[in-house]
Image (cartoon, rainbow, N blue to C red; front, top):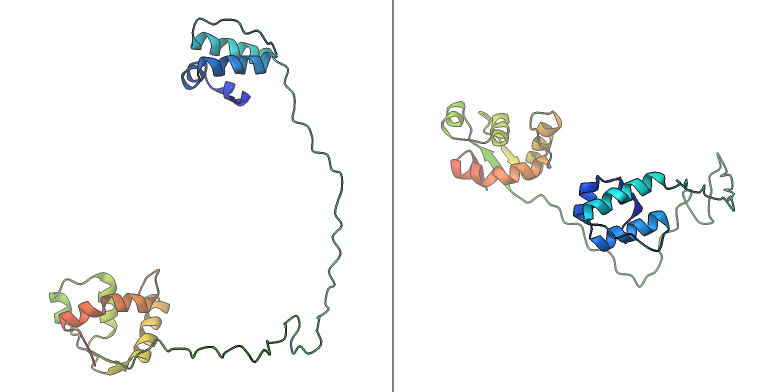
Length: 191
């Protein structure tokens, strides 16, 4: 059944979007009459519905009735709760079940690689290089030092933290993305 709020539409729109049966049902709902007059077309029915809606008494929405108000107990302030056997407040004791296996050892993400950069000013100008890759290579300009993967991660993260490398992704991920291209162009060697 059509909602009474639908009569706020323009009569032409109301006539277009509803069938004659829906319009008659809406007329009955608004007027309360069981016998609906016969309309010549849907537009005439929609116009008559607007007239009847304007005459109909408006009933405000009833106020919600509050039957019960829950009481919220006051929380103790300034008190730290300790349980017997706890070392810290509100911390459950550790599980002492011996049947659970030890967790697997944590794998280090850094691999045993050594990175060497071979970047000079002239070589950067010759190649077509994306901006983020250019920033990374610019930090290692004329630098022939070898970097372990952990040390290189620290340098890349520092570049991002200083605002030199601008990215929404983790900085190391950006380096990993451009690493094959740097190797292919001869700016980086990995051993």
